[in-house]
Image 1: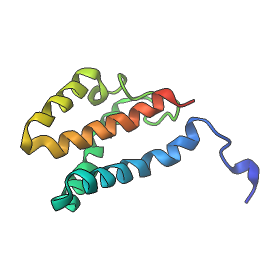
Image 2: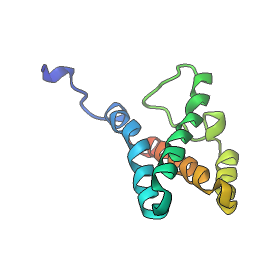
Image 3: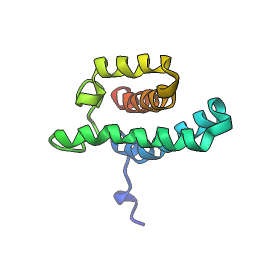
Image 4: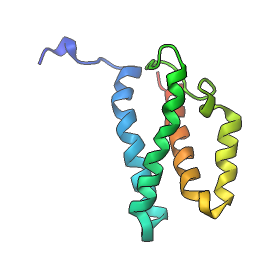
Length: 113
């Protein structure tokens, strides 16, 4: 493979890891916290990726250098606060955990070069 065709760093390299992390991290959390029902918890947390549908409202839809937190409607701080409050409700705890993991991973985009 031509070495010049490979990404050399920056936001684009992290974007290759970003999507798998949205499945790996919830899986690890499901195993650690929701062990008796980890598979169901993992699936629910993976489905929280649907929160990224708000990216369809952006132009361009995908920008590897953009910080999603504070930019997209469902990635705003008030929404994140609601996700945090939802941890209190047992029936919403898995969904809230998935959403907060998602926001945390998306927040990495704001700090990485």
